Image (tube, rainbow, N blue to C red; front, side, top):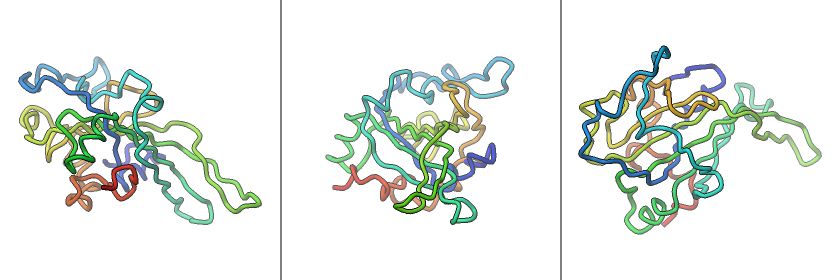
Length: 197
């Protein structure tokens, strides 16, 4: 996804996601579920929203990434934490693929860095936003929405926002960062030790 705000730049660099199997009605036309937010000029798609439940408490933690600051001596400029629903992880471990409707959520945090006696350490502070992907292996929703295609739904939500995404077109906003991970279904699974089979 392109850098919507400077602090979210690394989000696009890694293109990581979190899963949870929030299955949608595949026979509903995409246009029925998607519309522009009132006065916001942002897309609302209930199938791609941030989960209402506390996924950090109930989902599986897949892994985390740190993204270095432009000057590596400054530590990390962002921390990413990725989650998936337990059943989606079980399916992945059994089959090597996430099931349709599986949702992945990646929290993107701003950081603080300190020089401690153990070395330079960076830690998460404020939530910059969340990146959400939903599996759609048959691309059933791709014809009706610019947020769906290449087997996934794609969206980024700034800060605490859960419904109105700043993503306008996954091909221009997201795919460039995920393209290097095409062989692993556009996910950087090497950063998720829980998925090792």
